[in-house]
Image (cartoon, rainbow, N blue to C red; front, side, top):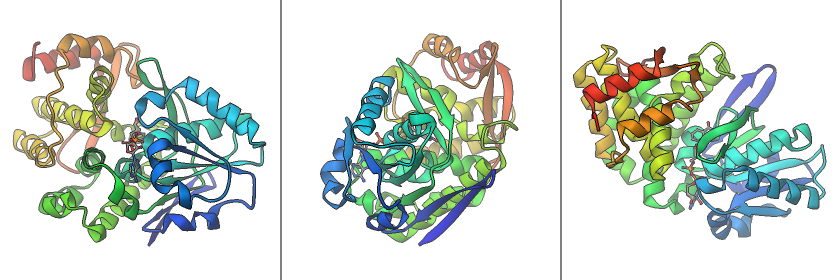
Length: 346
Ligand SMILES: NC(=O)c1ccc[n+]([C@@H]2O[C@H](COP(=O)([O-])OP(=O)(O)OC[C@H]3O[C@@H](n4cnc5c(N)ncnc54)[C@H](O)[C@@H]3O)[C@@H](O)[C@H]2O)c1
């Protein structure tokens, strides 16, 4: 078991990797807590949940909205959760994003923690204190920065994860390696089969490495003030459009977005073509690069709603060489022009 502490503005957020999730009781207050989960996770693990009120949402991205938030707030009121209460989110990235946001705004903010159950949420979504919901088709447009008191990442829970969800999670792991750690990138490349087979020891090591890397970035720049944290959005500018337009799973969409960002990074001299091909080849080894069918016109229209936009300029994340990334302010039109010339004009 490994414990990684994020120490931000004198507040601690503890991430436990390899801890048995059933010991979550040890971290909960004596009373006044409630569980937010989704129906899939509840069906599989509900019988072992701590004894308390439980509210489940429908699985998937479509639950990440204000209607769900309103329903959950009513549930908390009905369960008598007051300012001293505690929200425990048990689920993947969707549940963590919703539960974290709910706890952050309910009665102007109550305590919360997560049992993180998907690979994507263990390596990325549950760590770092970004909480959000979507409005209509715009992803994560209402949200806040607030750290969970704790996150438990028990990789035994990944055994029940559907295969495509597991693969989806690998995209954010590869992203972390591409932007922050060349050694981690090589380690993933050398162990494709062991990773596909979900080797538990290797997984614990990879999750711990990803969490440590994310923790170091978030500790330096929790609120994306210096720009350091923005590098975590590598692949997300195009990825979010693909996710929104096609409904593709987050990790697969981000993987396609990373492939585009690699092409743009190599076309603008941030990384060599060979490195760009190496990254795309690793994404392909895991079957992460699917045909998305989004047109240049659709990208153009939706880039204008990008959260990382300032006026007409987008904070675009360029990677290269492997293990490094930087944020470059570019006109949305300029990005699109490169996209049309290097990738597709359709
Ligand atoms: N806050 C952040 O920093 C951050 C970072 C990256 C992604 N995200 C968000 O995370 C979300 C994607 O997260 P996700 O991929 O975990 O999606 P998800 O939460 O929808 O989980 C994927 C599916 O797996 C199921 N599931 C989860 N754990 C399971 C388990 N142990 N066994 C069986 N089934 C299980 C869920 O019910 C769901 O059907 C997106 O909304 C994305 O925007 C947030």
